[in-house]
Image 1 (cartoon, rainbow, N blue to C red):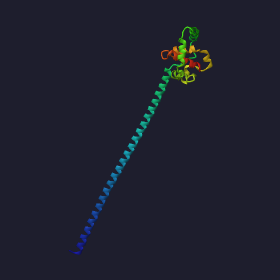
Image 2 (image 1 turned 180 degrees about the vertical axis):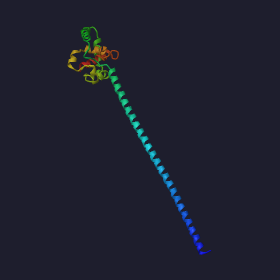
Image 3 (image 1 turned 120 degrees about the vertical axis):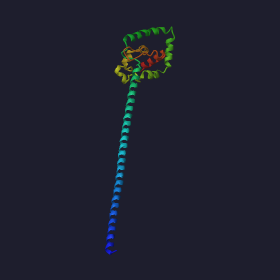
Image 4 (image 1 turned 180 degrees about the horizontal axis):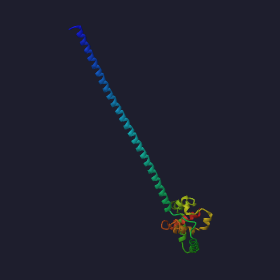
Length: 214
């Protein structure tokens, strides 16, 4: 084999090796690009999922906050309605507009009761029993919600023309007998209802005495 032939063969082998290296390098780069593409896709999918989860959490919180606010409003409305109903259901203990006829009738009957005192012991027993009754506790439980603790009338009832029982003018116009009748029989045309079926005569007498001391 001549030197020229050997050189030609060597050159051809070198070319083949170079082509093979170029092919290998090209294939490696292609694979690398595929891997990078997969990584990018995975990252994009993770970002998208994170954004979706964050939006879902925000929507859930907003819904929970809205429901909590709605529940709180419903509870407040229910309590206000219950308080208003309780105020209307509890009748006042008296009214400045008590019918004059009833008051006069009560006053007219008062002397008769006084005349009968020497013959009967019942009025004295009633007074003794009334003195042992906690009139303030009864007033606070039955009358305070409408008439207020001081008898001047609760704000919520002033629209119903509730009287100021602590006023000297009202006190001078209403005897104890008139107050007893108002508590026992109620006052027509007002929210004052009868208590004769809820309180004993002694309790009514005690509350009337308590009102007259305001």
